[in-house]
Image 1 (cartoon, rainbow, N blue to C red):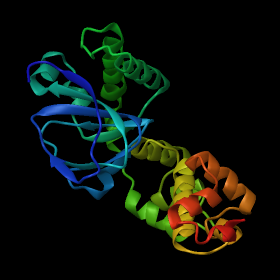
Image 2: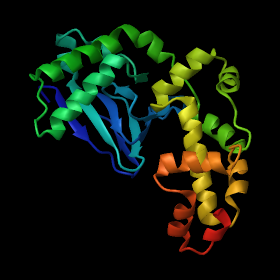
Image 3: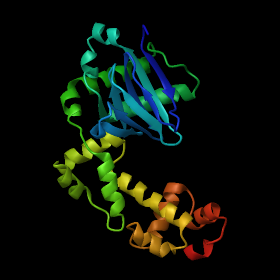
Length: 261
């Protein structure tokens, strides 16, 4: 590879492993992908629409798409990073949160592709995006390197107590961090806030219970931490774009629809 490659990719929902001789940055546009760096549990995260990951040359990464996803991927030859003085941006593997400028520029890059324009390193929008990306990564390397959360443990804690959901302050205390630092690290490693992540877990559990049990919607609401059936219905419709009753009918053949009314 003699020049940077910038393109949109979708990662398949199969476990894959790769190691390459160039640096790579992956930034989420839509959907999610899971990725583990160098087999380190504390360097396992998810790339979504609010974060990205730096993968230096030679770093093994295990990854898989979590359903439909769309990612902006930048491949940078190692020698080019050295020549341009940007090698500091690729000194360590790390997840990072997108700032407002990068979020806006990523959307512009995506819009160019949707309009049928090929991605080119000479495109003014692409050049501005690359400059903003390098500015975001290079000065922040020491801070980014300190992002270490055991997401598997956090998920297990949340899943075990969905009926009485843990708050961010409790999770931060258990991680030995301030609430602000925990929040920032969580967004950097998952692309979503702790609150949004918890809501997604609660709704996923609700959907599973609707499909695999004949519990009433009121009971399911309490089981996953909602105050009442109305609150669950509102959140469920907003997330899945259909009511719990329709979800249950479509996923069970209509056999237990009456229990959610």
